Length: 485
Image (cartoon, rainbow, N blue to C red; front, side, top):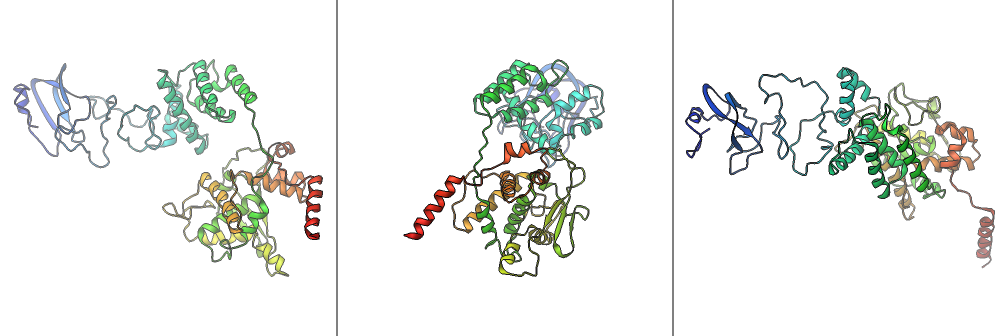
């Protein structure tokens, strides 16, 4: 490194340039300390001389950008923090060995920093997003004396989707605390309530506020020896929010099951042996959703392993088990297999039976399993059919979109306008309500759906599919007048 002639002293003449190795000068002469306060610009050096300490050894690794360098490190090497405080690592601390096997308190690169600095930060090396996401909770558990391996196991008590959701909510709370100069981990109950009130004023529902409370409680220190979510003021706040903004559930269906089934029995969903991978996937997941009354999360837990999927002889039935270790969202009943019965297995006696077979879930499942075996990369039943994740496991969000897309495409097939505000979860209420009208007992419906009591179905899922007697009389009268005319 050639020094400028306008200063620096005689001692700096002992430095020599090197293009590939670190620069190291050892001697008895004192040299001002070199402190990298920020990333060097393209025109000036980013080093400043100070009189903090006298150094007998100065090492500048090649990975740190020296003045006049290109500013890019070698592939796979870390880059210095740009725009924020300079954090020392084990290569910058002389005489100390820092163990790298510990829970990091920084956010993962996939999710971003919990508190934005407003400047462009350089990406950190890849880490486990789930471990880093709950780093404050993990650090608190390590502070109690638990080994890191034990803490890792404890953090995995929550589902991966729950950990990611809590991480996202915690990041939003951390940003709010930074704006108000607060410590999110040690914030008071009143500060948390102020944050919840702002979110409530923005229009968030009480159920969403409960998720925020759960996420903050997972990271926050205990209040009064218990979780933040059990604080009496927090409990009363959520109860008051529910009274001020009660949940409104519509009883009128947004789409018609008859129209969707009619569309699934026609092209481009048939013939099933010739349809594309997309339409075969959409048809299969919809038929399984309405025939099993299961949540999308339960369908995601299905597997094609020999112990989880079995077809009865003659393709008259199909038995589907969830993967081992899967815990449903509401484990109210003893988990059992999903049993699908064939509608009209061949040979057909008439044309009506042949048309019913087009909507048979066993037939669609058998065709999908054999087709997906060509590109499958996992034992999960439903896998992605398009690039770049073809063959990989489908997420719950993707599977929900498939159900909604199947409903929309079925409406287009029969020439009807696509319904609005369709949700994949509506298949449970639609199928259960139609089964009740068809004469299926309430106990059988609750057992298939996993509801602990009939009140769950009546309160949340029962839809008004039948018309009132007065409306039926008016409809018959109008039809009669039309025939007379």
